[in-house]
Length: 128
Length: 249
Image (cartoon, rainbow over all chains, first blue to last red; front, side):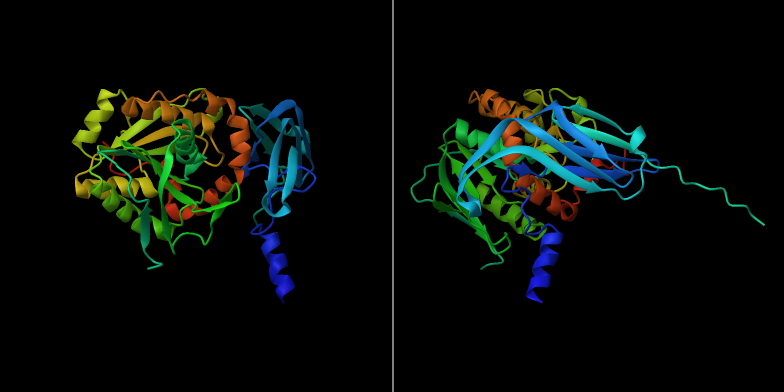
């Protein structure tokens, strides 16, 4: 029972840290669903455009980016030792199917904006 | 007791008609980043803290020392309120009331809140503009004298809206400086603009170069506070700030 409670908390991101011990940080991101597309905005400070990789499938987007300057914390938090953050990584499950071939992205002022057109799945229904 | 707000001051602090600056976590963490920079740049000492059972049950550790997450810094003429935790919605009414009551006892020259004003096209803005809201004629005159454009129409929400309201009741001049910002990402650029406008009132030669030079690192370090603050925003009705009020004109 206790274990399930903890798993639930982790899955909801309530106790899961937004970083991993190997130096990956989870970036802040927001997803907006519009009628014809999904827009994803991701905050990627300390990153150059050429160091960003975005991979998309019909139902998910994976973003990874290497930092141009690593960020170091000393004797930090629960791990009580130095940790160096080197990159961002984020996997996003999409709320609708998209056409990955038509996706576009821009990167300005440290913000990555990805526009993902939705798959056209509309069928005309005949009326009797 | 734990449902109340306790503002605890260190003994023997001399304060005379201060300007009180409030920079609590809100959209873009504009106030929180700006207030922290102000404390560091002006080398202000901690002069007190605020505690309440309405705040998250947390303390913060810096360099091995246990500290309250909501702290007050200052000197004889300036008081700065900073917080390392977001304010829960249940705390903002009593906090606004207690802060105003406490400020009134200090006979302040004025109270200035530093905040963000979310704009959808922030990616295209190089230097965010700063708008002002004053709670009475004196405050509005001060904004005019400093050439700060008024926010003419719209909603404001969160603790600074309540501080303006409470200050009106006490006859204290209060101003909110609102800097165009990203709503959900820490925005040191917006904080720098807010500080430059604040300095028109303080005349302390606030240097924002260090803040802008360290902007990328600040964004990374402020990431978790931004995430927690974003979670508390729906309760603050922050979405209203981008809505059009019905009584227009």
